[in-house]
Image (cartoon, rainbow, N blue to C red; front, side, top):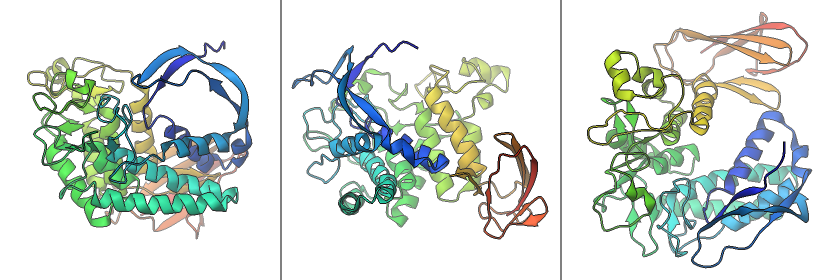
Length: 412
């Protein structure tokens, strides 16, 4: 395939960190640490001048190559730019690129990015240990500690975590705000990252549920209330109608992260209730609901509207980012199928009234038929694992690609 070499250079603060996230996920699954030594060229292009937040251009490969490990380090080091509250600067946007004027004057900070960066450092320190990179282990460990303190003090709003600080120091996602008093992803990532204080995580997710879950229309809002008349100018997000897309509708990426957070807290009943609720097929089970939803019931939508008169209407569809997270959370976190370096582990988080379920997993030419029984009515916890009639004491199975069919019985 011909490389076009075209792309957009931005001041978004999270894009470069997703490289580390994916590398860590890949190594955890495969055990292939050799990828860290792969030599990869950097791209060459003009640095963005002051006042310009993005530029679409053609970027050629440079003569400078470094290992993937060093690419990851450069990305992290670029991200270690903290503001007055000890939180990372948001730049011209983070995951929510609609917040493009929150910090484009180089002072605004992102609470969500703080949780994400904490999670990245937590994952990457394990790779530093593999590489015996002791100086970075110490450095990143100290940054993690300071970041966790800032997140649980400067970012805590009393009942939930704030979303960001503007260049002028005004908070977003605070009870002080008329609009966007609460934002979903600060709450969910306080749990996903494990950076939130234990009591605060539960309180924050309760607030998310109280203010952002709309069971009547079957969606989980990104934020509430939407931006409309407030004097705060967070960026182009405010140009969307209130309740459309990121501006107070469901952005499905974030809805799935909320479900993942409920899983990590052990709330299997809630997790599956909301996982089912946002499933597109649930929006099309009757003629009336299908007319309301208006888009395909067999693919994941990027967004669902909450706007007045458009409640429950699907936005643009075939959204691969949310589709992959939907699949990942369902299989790995709810059903609990985890593969780490060729080792199969089961760590389900399901409703108490689920009696049993099964998974058919193909590993190379081998088949693993997994049956999970929940006769005790539990949300989490594995009591017993049996492989082909033999009890597995350590509750994990080394996968073998030998073409055999294997039967795994799991008792919760």
